[in-house]
Length: 622
Ligand code: ME8
Image 1: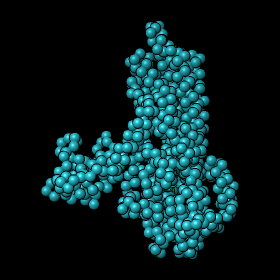
Image 2: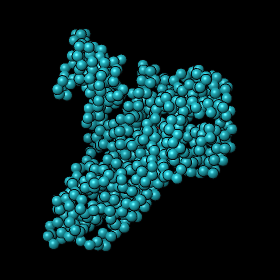
Image 3: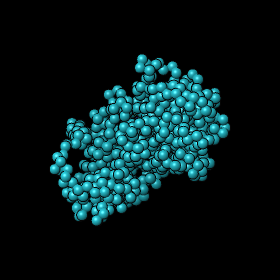
Image 4: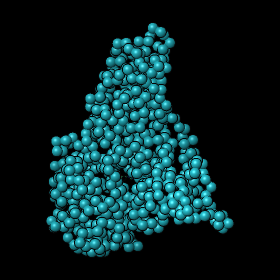
């Protein structure tokens, strides 16, 4: 889509709730968005990729209280977990929006006021049933249970009755406009099957929507009537405007809005396909191109979710495999519109067969042979033969098909096609047997030809897989002796023939080590058990307690310890001296958040093996 005559592409993920830590489901949406953003960049688009966190509302208020924290303390902690996970997964977002950011809050208030002035918002009284877990009002036709509550169809939790004064948004008056818009823009909701779901819901009739609460304190205040807080979905959906500059950088905003695609799970499609365009129409904004509702990852037939208590922690997989195998698996295993079942067996099967065997072997043997037989630089190859020509021509064909699949968000199909080609190249090597050619002095030219073809194919493949597997692609790219950054390549003009025989090839390190299922499961359950044991702390005697020398200190400096995931090094003023200490808290705090904070420190803890005068720190932030 071209906006303001520039080729821009604006993609968003949902902003995730901060009531609990991220899981595979959140990782999935964000990986899809990252892959599409990277692909669009390779195709020469100017891309803006927005993600973030949804931090207001009753659900967060309640979770924070249960944990003995203020809502913002809980949000700060969980935001770090999200940001760390995105870093581990190589997520290349352009902005991370938090709904507690003042400029977001100001933008939401401005739009609220605008709608009020236009008469799209009015005051009334709401009474009905509210699901805190989904932050959603239940429709009247949901049956009332004996205990005086209703059951939310989405999360199967109890929804209690609420009756309070509130402001309503005139959703009902948008019904015909929405239906008209859907019929003129059949691509607005994708995959297509979900469009029917949305239209039939709207056709059943839309009631006005309560968009403020007086019993929820944790939220954006209604301008001029601060006893009301703005309904969390009204607040959250507007992140797609405030995250791209609305009300603080209108040039940026006008450049990228409307969004090309809001990527969401099918659980929140209705909020995005009904409420969101209605809010936008009322406020006079152009509407987004597409809302894509992807399927769910399930475990043993049940949706993976915090409320169902069956979440999978991506960190355990990431520690063993790094980011690319997880990115590859999630995108390769199922079409994004459908549900998928996550199993470790399925994951390891893919990693071992597609990555270690097919791609890993191709990289290893091609590059190792070039290093072993030609000291890393391929001499003048012989003239192309029929099989070489076919390998080259097949690539153009695969590239065209992969492009089409990426464009249509058929990521599993794109990978499937690319893997067919990877195996064509593996077969080309097996047919030509360069390892036998290497034994014959008269076949140096032929050997150079075959390895040159294989290296050219590998370079081309690397570009095709880059959006999905950025880390491995960049490694292969540098082993191939490429000087320019892979991100500088233009997908559309990429050719098989672009490879230069002058490059100096390096011997590759294994990219995807094979992992045995039994060993992995043993290791994984070990990690889980350790986590559980850590929670059940052993008791200390009074004598032991008395030995500890507690002091209150102030953090003067803080920085992440390079090469570690969790460690932060700090200088702490404890009165009589300034101590250097280390603590494994980087997944909860960022160094800049720690400066000037007060901490309780045990100053006589035995120094751990961090060297020098740095001690491990046992501390509690005050
Ligand atoms: O709904 N499979 O936040 P949330 C696939 N704050 N994707 C999954 C998934 C699963 N099992 N579980 C979660 C919210 N997701 C609101 C959004 S946007 C203005 C506000 C992904 O933390 C999927 O994208 O509950 C789903 O829509 C989202 O996480 C829900 O995240």
